[in-house]
Length: 292
Image 1 (cartoon, one colour):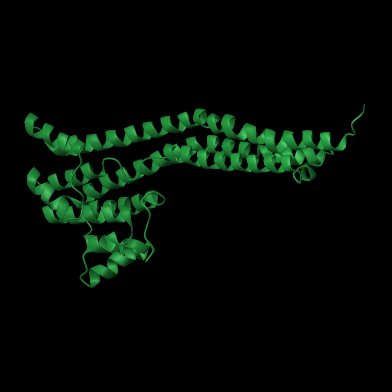
Image 2 (cartoon, rainbow, N blue to C red):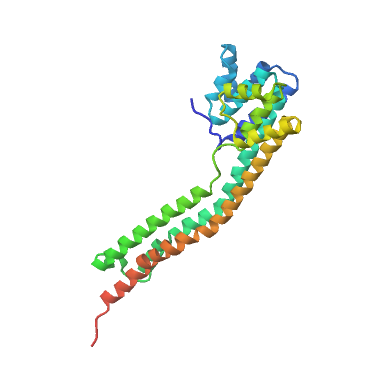
């Protein structure tokens, strides 16, 4: 069974979950809601419908579909265990998935221009080599000489270094894995069923979720000390974390444009000289007769 990736297909998962939430809000029973989605051709809904008919837990079936659906399955288990409203719970998770997907799209769009520029510049040494041949020089002949071999090896090594360096810079500019604030959303679902905070944390961990992170625990402590409901605080904190992740991703993408100048200056331009200018000069020196 092919899993659904949390990043590449988060929007599709969010769309399915939101449709499910609408059906549940309209008054349909969970089994009937999944049946309607399955009749529309949704692959996950077909699996859930078949599992439901055989008595298999919904959360187990969803977990097999990949990380995004695993989190939905855990939330489903939490909501049904504590009696939280499924429609509202699923709608909140759909919004979280869509926000995370949009944040990654924003970063990918911002990274597109510097990545394209880096790829084009990386071909500059080879373009210079071809240009030298078009101008009537014989760079390939120059590479048969010891100095030419040294130029070729040095240029190739510098191009390889440019490629590795650029990939490392782009990789560091990518968003962090996971969905920011999703653990807070799941804890909020558990608390919306009216249980205590210790019971909510127990149910969340029983559903296979990791222990809440420090930020979520800090929000729960604030709720206890201030005597206010934690559900709204948790959801506001989750939304704030997603927005912060989106902003940080855009800043990293913007900074990448400047950082890509480093491999350009240190590796690409010297490779251009070694593979483009060097062979032309060597060709001129070896073909021009010396005059006394």
